[in-house]
Length: 232
Image (cartoon, rainbow, N blue to C red; front, side, top):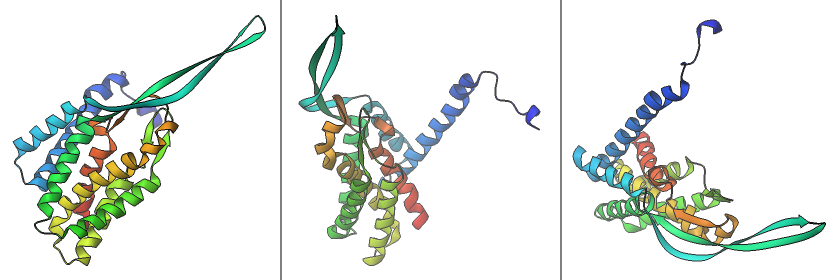
């Protein structure tokens, strides 16, 4: 049977023209559907929001600079060892599409929730999710702060489900609760509370939400809503 199975002759071209567009279409469809569910907007408005996030993912806004790590290069010349040290600065920035826009949307969802849910209920979900994300997040040199992808959205959806049951609120609020707490807990638990660990990453530009639409902050909100539907 193995003799009759073979990959496309031009595998990279196949991936570029078939697989990547399919994943992109699926991702856009999921993202716009989430915006429709959470904010009650129509398809055109949801697509506009997604477009602004996509464009914003290319824009990093510098916030402040700090001294980075010291690099030492050693040279051996005529039997003598010379060491050249240079210090590189670290620029802390926020990504417009991966951090700023999702955070604004999360705050909007949070304010909408307060008309139906006590603020302390929202705060419980946020604090629990932030604690879980913070415990899993780790600084990786030359990469950034990393956290297992499914931990933030699952935490927001699960704790949101428990809190709604505890407070006797309808589960129809869960997608909005999961999105708002998921985005903001990922921002605080993985990024803001780990700013003290930036020296372990290295130098250069460290952007919060720097991977744009595919960053953990934005994806946490998207997948938190997807997982929340499973609890309803």
